[in-house]
Amino acid sequence: MPNTKQAEKRMRRDAKRRLRNRYHLSRMRTYIKKFRKMVQAGQLQEAQEFLPKVISIIYHTASKGVIHKNEASRRASRITTLLNKALQKSQG
Image (cartoon, rainbow, N blue to C red):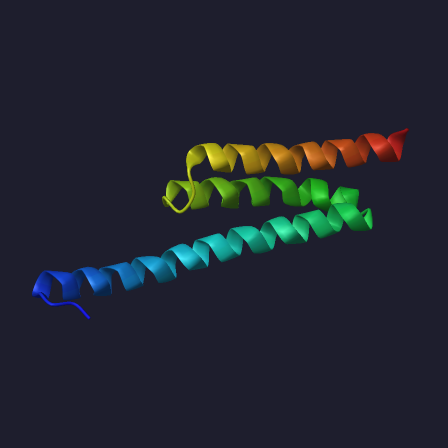
């Protein structure tokens, strides 16, 4: 337990931030999972339309400081590559 008023305030502040961070991280992961399921199920047209939304949420999460901007770029790159590979596979 905190011993000083400052430590009590820091504990309250950290609890709020933890909840906020958990919300953004969970939301991002959920959208990525939905996207991956679409690609695996072969719903490539829907996945193509959903991709900008997922990328937007990834970068939004980074802007809140929950993940680093390089991690956001890496995640966006990987899901884009996943879709492109699936599209190539379906064409040829």
